[in-house]
Length: 267
Image (cartoon, rainbow, N blue to C red):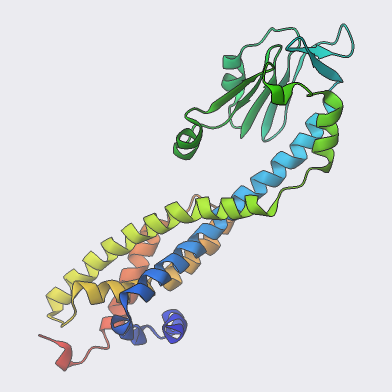
């Protein structure tokens, strides 16, 4: 299997040996390729984490002293005015006067990752509406009234101290990678199945003695170089259509593989 991994970069005709590998190893290799594709996306997500951390510290510096009294946001200064502070990743609202609503917080979120509001009666967190987020939260808006026991001790000083010293835990990077891995593997697997269909059509037209199952095994290793190239490009830009490139490049490499078949391999 290691020899095939090396051959997938330079010696394409040796990839024919992939048809002898057990199916379990082939599936394991699909996950390895999926992990390679997931790395750029996980890297981008990690960058968002750092950006949110830095923006949170900027917001903390602007946050005035306040406490929660009688289940309402109460500034330390009697005439403290509300404000809206925007960074590249967060829109933050401080509204002790009750001028803004929960819907306003969600509406603010245009091109930002988070919209957070400390309103008069509740804490509101709005996130981009995605399939994953909706599946986990049921909605892209989280509203926590100050009547909740967890928010009883909320105040400006504690928030500033927390955001100043807060660091991104290691498991957040792991979650980012795992969340990126799932769609990468599924998308790659679908692409490989289409490539297998194209490879099987080639073998039928050339009357080669290769089954669809054997073609799939060869195609998986033929996709190695296209996957690595796609991952490197995605580190620079995610706008590149990696799916189509992997499909076309894999079929091209597969064509180089079957050029090495001799007459005895024909039916």
